[in-house]
Amino acid sequence: MKVGSLFSGVGLTDFGLELAGFEHAWFCEIEPYARDILSKRWPGRTIYKDIKELDGNEVEKVDLLSGGFPCQDVSCGGKRKGITKETRSGLWYEYARIIRQVRPRYVLIENVPGLRSKGFEIVLKELAEIGYDAEWIVLSAAQFGAPHLRERLFIVAYPHSAGDDDPTGPRRLFTEERINGIDFQLDSEASWNNLRVNRASPESICKAYPGPQIHRMDDGHTDWLDRLKALGNGITPQQAYFVGSLIQDHSFNVLNLLNKKT
Image (tube, rainbow, N blue to C red):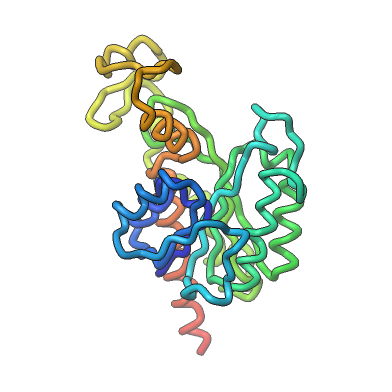
């Protein structure tokens, strides 16, 4: 399935989706540094600069539209101004506009868990008005073995008519069976980038990784500021890989169901 990526950043979500078997048709990212990374990682792909200027009627049609709109105004660490036309998180309305124009088979929305208590109803209402059902789940990087928590909310939406009418049938992605099918690593030691980390002991992280520690101070290299910003805005690719794999599995089941009906 082909992907159109919005708010792409340096492509950490997209890397996870690629590992899950997706192929990227185009990206949209406003930061020059991030666009440079995208063009190096996905040479030859079209990269649009500004979602406000993007016309979904003119882009290549895709099966999955993916992106994490800005979280600053819904995050528990911010001022919680919410999703409005005046806030950065209000770029959600541009995302919704693209969904209306593209009408993909699936929509993947990533954001901070704070969205659930600040603006979640706006996102779900907009999706419903467009004609999409939605499911959601919160996944942490630690569940996939990372030494840090980094929880993220993943919303997957698809048209009302997709799949079986039975809500317990194959149209659901985040079933208990599928969630229990992954070996989440929340306890004791875990393997992460060939390191053995015990998250119960913060000191073990420093022992496992003896390299330089990142401090928020001037080291004379401005590219590190861009790098830190890009990593801060991104997610762990393993999280996106997991959700992408569920979408692939869901698509296969829905197509099988439709074939049986015809």
